[in-house]
Length: 212
Length: 212
DNA sequence: CCATAAATTTGTACTAAGTACAATATTTTG
DNA sequence: CAAAATATTGTACTTAGTACAAATTTATGG
Image 1 (cartoon, chains in turn blue, cyan, green, red):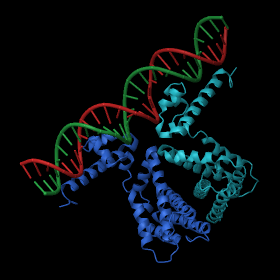
Image 2 (cartoon, rainbow over the protein chains, first blue to last red):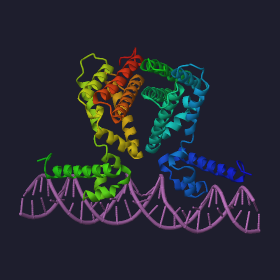
Image 3 (cartoon, each protein chain N blue to C red):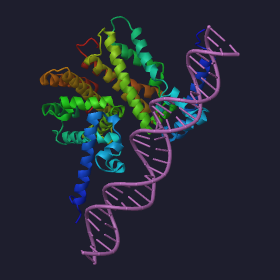
């Protein structure tokens, strides 16, 4: 009997979750850099080594949804109408994320606090930048795949970099609006306005390529 | 007599240079992550603490020209014709860097090796990303200053992010061309072509703002 | 030139992340 | 229940970076 949900698997998941919960609590209370892995281990009643078993780097305790953006991209391109320009697929995806107030396009006190914690920690900021670059690479590969090119070419890399940059700027401005106590509607509007302007410009950059 | 080039100042400069030289040598020979600060100190015949005195972080031993990009930006905007659109100033600046084969737009075996060393080290890559973000902040401030806005506004941040992203992509593609053994002319052409396309798109994004 | 101030260099001790690897405990399986 | 597989723990280590005091070197005023 191979055991996808035996005692062992359940315990592992519970241990992982316990560590993650304890860590999150400590981080928001005292800041990422003021909590050591040893403390987390102790609070989670587990050895320091076990923490590193589940979370190879300390930053992984904070960013626990890395996989999600990858999945969202894959799904968007899997479901897109045949023949739609890749850039249009992304445009619709961003709209849809904003409509659904998905975490990647949501502006609340909680998200503001989350990103403030990141900004206050050099290590977390560095990891966030790293994830951004990985996302660009992924997106470039997905884009190239969508038009059946074997490898990400220069156009795909340009498109991917520009779109991710646009989202970053738009999201940052959205957060700023939220912190300035604007209404949810006007915050969302600020986000989407930057995205729309960006997509118009990116379309020009990609004119003549198969991506626009 | 206050002493801008007394014995003390000269010794300091010599020490700094000696450390930097020794470090560079070791890094290119064995890779950034395989050389410890203690080794560098020993090779430079100086104490470990002295290394950290001059270079607060190990990465600073490798990236020793951080200030330069800031200066170039400042200079470009100080010298620009009155009334020129800031985006045009940047366009001319990029052209000029390419014409002069400035390090930021130069594609040789040496620059390729330099960036390969960076790519092979997580720490150096992280620092490079950090510097990129700092450059964006600087540029946003310079842009806002150029049209006499007190603080970097959303448009300035969008413009700055997009231009720096464009340069990053264009430079990366330039390096790729070089490594693929293209001629210097065609490498330069690839770089400039991406920059030109990008500037066209960015102009669209900024239509109606004082930046374009 | 000398005494003293100022700045640089060094030594010591520390924290904390991350790794290697062996020893131990727990779960699965036959 | 015994043996195999896997998870957890302990120990020892490396390295970047910091705090701070002691020692050395250079500058300066009389």
